[in-house]
Image (cartoon, rainbow, N blue to C red; front, side, top):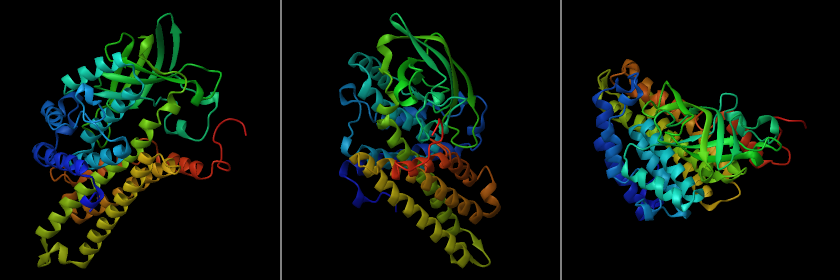
Length: 412
């Protein structure tokens, strides 16, 4: 099922197996040891430090970091496919942990592409030396989230967060919310408007902003129903002064960030698939052990039908995921449509897989100490992670019919 050996290179098989061993021997035992741990109200007490330390020891933190800084080299021609394989395995253990690491991978690729050699040396050296070091991508704002990614490009929807050049520093003012890793990150990639006279695509710049920069304040951790081992945060910038050399991309930051956004959709789908696989595997074990009506559950026709349905949905998600990841790696003309399709399709199908898992467990499916309900909570998050399903569908139509698709802001 899913990423079978025939689809993988030797390197991808090794990375998959390393990820699987880490999940089976480190992550799953940690999750099962205390099902209430994710509900601790101090976000810093949820994930034990050893979890990221052991991920670091397994080489799972350094993906996307250039080899010259001690990172794991990824073949650009198969990068999205490789990351999807690894993210699937990690999310099988815990989707919040997977998201924690996925953000680091994507931002590492972004920094390697656009930061100066000096900045790369400074930040990648520190990142490799500190297993708890996290990075966050600050785009979403209180007044604009998924809707900002609809097919429009007019000044009316520019970033509320603004950056103004003042001598040898950029001064940033604004607010970001719903930021993955935002609560406990050490380094932020921040998007801000730098030209109000043009559309969002032409007037948005990106900056590297260290957590300790005066004027940057982390104001809270968003308490989500799922993925709770990734601490989603809110950040306020008040006269936050960033050195001029910390500018990553001037005015064309959104256009240049395709290397972050397209693989991101694929990785959301991969995390959904991992969640579904975890729910499926535990359910298969349960229906082969639980006796009801004088026979094990799998021998009841109603149960067998649901297991078959779960397996079919997982195979369908895996097939589209491979197809979309390949399209992104090949930079094919249908990559934008496919990466949005797989994000939407996977999130919806895996919710159905998790619903079957809960119902086949009967009353146990809703019990915190059993853990099946966690898969459902985690799956629901992906319905709107990295864009809502409706916004993603608008983008699919725009990618397929660019000349006739509707516009959703500004005058016709």
